[in-house]
Image (cartoon, rainbow, N blue to C red; front, side):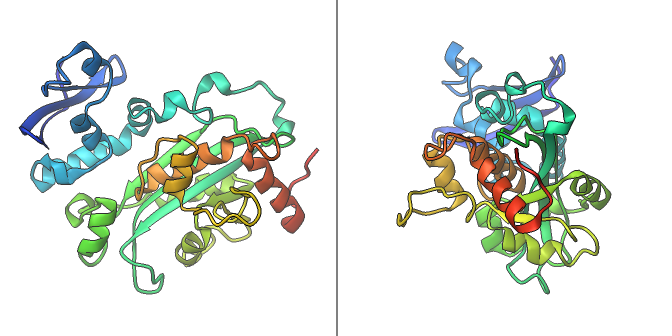
Length: 296
C-alpha cells in the first residue's frame, strides 16, 4: 500500500523506519525494528510506532513542516489513533458494543473539555490545544454510552511556546504554526451538552470564560473533586495520570485529546463503593446544585 508518512524514529540501536497510512479506511502502521518485524510486533505496537501516535516528536527525525503535516493528519484521524493505542478497543466508554438501546428521553449529552496553554495566567497566556468530547449518558444509571464526537486541535500562539511547556506536553511552536482552533465547532459541541466536565476544571474555566458565551450557563464539574475516588480520609493523589493508572486506563497525558479520552473512560468505571458508574455521582451533584437534571 502507499503510506501517507514514512518517518525516521530514534531507537536504542539507531533509527527505525515507521510507516503510517490508511488501508481500507483503517489506520495502519509498520516499523522495521526487530520487534516490529515479528508476527507479534506486526499485531501490536512497538515503542517507535507508539511514539508517533502519542506525538512524542522528540523521537521523530523530521523537519518542522513534516511534523506539522503529521500532527494535522493525526488530529484528523483521532478515532483511529485511539484504536491503535488500545484506548478505544479496550475501554467501555468508547466501545460501540457497550452502547445500549434506550429511549432518547432517558439520555442526556455531556461534554468533556481539556486545554493546554502557554502558562497558567488566563489574562496573559494562550490556549495552544483544545479537545472536546461529546458523550451520551443514561440519566438513571449514569452509564456512559460512548463518545459521540471528538474534536481536537492545536493553535499557533502569538509568542513562542516556552521550552518548559514543550517538554511537558510535546507541543512545540513548530507544530502549531498556522494552526487555528475552530471555535465554531467547539461552540456547537458545547451548546449540545447538558453539563460539562474537566479534570481540574477551574483551570479550563479561567481560560474558557474569557470567550464570550462559550460556557455561560453550563454547569462545569471538576472530576478531581467529584466523584469520590478514594475512601474518606485517604490521602491518595487525584491527578489524572495516577487515577488512570490505578484504574488501568490507557492515557496520553498532557495532551488535550488524551486527557479528554482518559477522563471520560475514568468516570465510566463502576465505583466499588456505590456499584454504579462514577459519573452517577457527577449527575447527583449537578442535580443538587443546579436543578437542571432530574434523576430517577
